Structures are given as C-alpha cells and as structure tokens.
Length: 189
Ligand SMILES: [Zn+2]
Image (cartoon, rainbow, N blue to C red):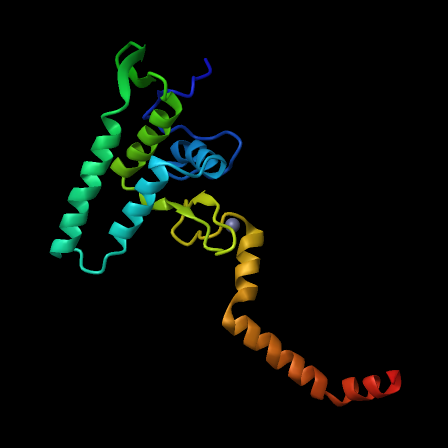
C-alpha cells in the first residue's frame, strides 16, 4: 500500500534504489525535496534557529538556555496549530502505528513532524544548506563530512578558495616565465 503523504511512519526502512542508507535518510529525503521546492516558512525558521543554537559557543551559558527556551516555545506554538491522530496500520504481536495529520495544512504538518522526528533522533543538524555560498540548496548529510548538495558545488567551492586562486596564480606566473612558453609567444608575434 502506498502511503499518503500525511502518514508518518517512525520506522526507518532501507531504500532499494540506493546502496547505502544512513539513519534518518528515509525521513529526510522528502523533507529535502520539500525544502528545495518551497524553501520558506515555519520549518526553515526552525532549522535556522536550531543551527544558531548549535553554533553558540558556550553550551552551558545562560544565553544558550534562554535561546533553548525561546526555541521550544516557538516550536510548540507552531505545533499547537496542527492536528494529528494516531492510526493503527497493522495489528499483530507488534502493532504498527502511524500519525495522521488532519485539517487544511496537512503537508506543512507532515514536514514539521518529520523534522521533529529527526530532532528526536539527534539527526536534525544533518539537514543543512549546501556549503557553496552561491547555491543555497538543502541536503541531508549522511556523513558529517558531506557539505555540498552535488559534486559540481564541491568543485565550484574548491575553485573559489583562496589557496586554489593562489595556486593558479603561481602556476600561471611560472608558465609565463618558462623559456619554452616565451619562445612560443615570440614566434606567434
Ligand atoms: Zn549546492
């Protein structure tokens, strides 16, 4: 049975199409698609705030606990607007229960619940923007080292780094000063 988008399963299944899956990947993939298509609203604000919270320098400081309180209040004020009910999908020794969003904003409710599911499993930080500053697309970083949404963004970023620019400048200077290059240039004139 194909799941309707407002049913949320808390079971992580292995994707058949990909060889390697990471915890949370099945939950995150539709979220990444949604973020890259819509890209605004409560969820983006939540992710940005969560990121700011993570990057605070002093984990035990008062500021951090104050921000945590504000973040918690904000999330709960959004959640209160959504309606969910549990739905028993399968009974047996182990029952399978899913949450079903109701009302007019089922898609928003669904993506929000998916994000919270990731947060509960300590995986929310893996949902992030591509590190290429000119891109801005979202990705799910299965490994901590994954920073770009595509190989082309990684290449672009590498070429825009200062060390790379310096390396190219040095290379070009050496190339121009090379006697063989000079004689070739003279012949061309
Ligand atoms: Zn990118």
